[in-house]
Length: 157
Image 1 (cartoon, rainbow, N blue to C red):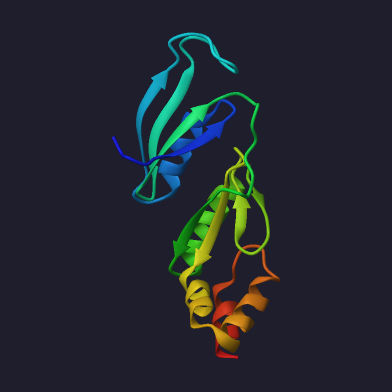
Image 2 (image 1 turned 30 degrees about the horizontal axis):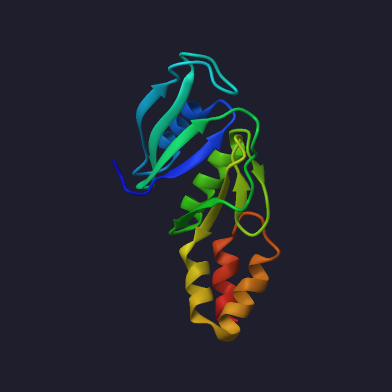
């Protein structure tokens, strides 16, 4: 067992979410599924209570806790992509599975979990600083899904 694991609250579909992530992202898998030993807020004895899974190598536990708490952008997975094809693949998988687009490379899956689909060219531009970072940042601020070619062009000026 890991010393530190991210626990993500779901209303009732932690297993479905984990299985979706495992279909979409590399180095992602579903481990043990634990059922509730008795009734709990939001569920009954025998319902799935927690699911062990990894997302791109990060250990997580999905907790089916009912609808008491909601997801927010205060927590997100940031997935680094190498090119437009990879960016499109992840973005389209999340949004196309009942998710929703947001701004600046952010989207939400159908369970409300936020994702930042971030091309490496953007993080490299930000790390470069100065005018290059400013141009890339200003270009990003006009986008939902990140357009790799437009960020690369902004970097060059």
